[in-house]
Length: 485
Image (cartoon, rainbow, N blue to C red; front, side, top):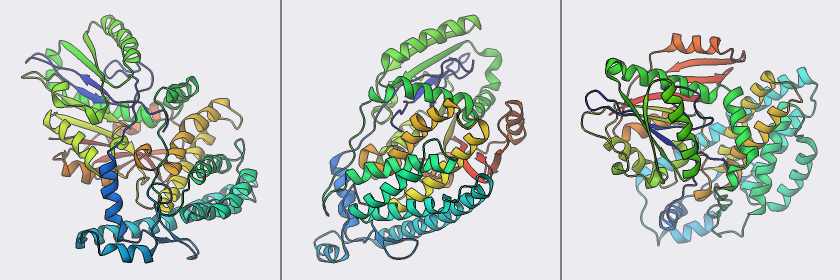
């Protein structure tokens, strides 16, 4: 999203009597929890032109196409980022390129299958949801809106600018910002499609949406929307609950020896960190806790193990809440480097919370449909939690969730930072980095937390292969997992 907040490192350390913890967490307001305070910062992540060029060349010999719902289009994922390449041009150029390995073909066609499957499942789910909403709200145009969105996404993927523009005109007339939940979420996708259309370049051109300035992302409206999301939606609070419980369990044996808490904020907004750090120190003194606060003026990709002071005999924990997906890149190397850096610190436990949806596939249409299904569920939940004309809901939708949607739909290359992936994919990534799964055994406590906090009826907590998943009805929203070295 445009208002991306950086990670923060909470260090709770001890020299036999002291404990160290490291936290990479998605921040909101300071001092929501006495154990894991919340800090704010922001960063935009990128990778080199060399890596991007290698990735483009690697895919040149393979037709990145996927049939649409009716089978009338062949859609490439590179409508903005790397330019679509026709079969005829790729055939002539493949002889001059390095020979592709068999595993590359397997990976490409597996991704193509998953994208087609995602389109089919998401379209069916969206049509079913709209049909149900039409009976309840009398929205007879709901089905037409779904069809228009899919058709427009197909046209954009095919770089058919004229046809997409015609569809967008009709969509703008039907996707109302203050309409039904699906009309509202559709309006966010219309904004993203319009931005993507405006950047469509001639076939073979290379380009991407320029990342927003970090300070632009820190507008008052976006900050207010973030705070509202924390207070009203259970997503981030769920992550803090799982993280706090897991970290306290990890430090349970040292509870009687605990003497000092050290917090190191890592990010580019140093002044903001320092203000919150002062508040935390005051809060800690009232609790009788000796708190040290410091700042590392770096983002995750530039962070090195020696930036984090870990002394002999200390116990380290890492907590990452809605952060690591921003480090995922096409090259796959950026995230691996961050995970290896964390692994070198040898944390006792790493708690990971991420959006449980596939918004990082290689095909634009598959990403679009997955995102449409995912955010429709979120907007449905907002409908159930707040009255129709509540301004708080409008602020969250337009200045928080819409920013994520537009980043997924309109951006490519280093500007696309909302690269959400399913928990199974994170499981593979963490295993490759040398981490071992540590099952979260707190399902009863999680359900009790859901009831105690009076979370809106419709939210459920599920257990999946040792992970805890918070979902809206049957749709997963965020997944929490625990890892050890």
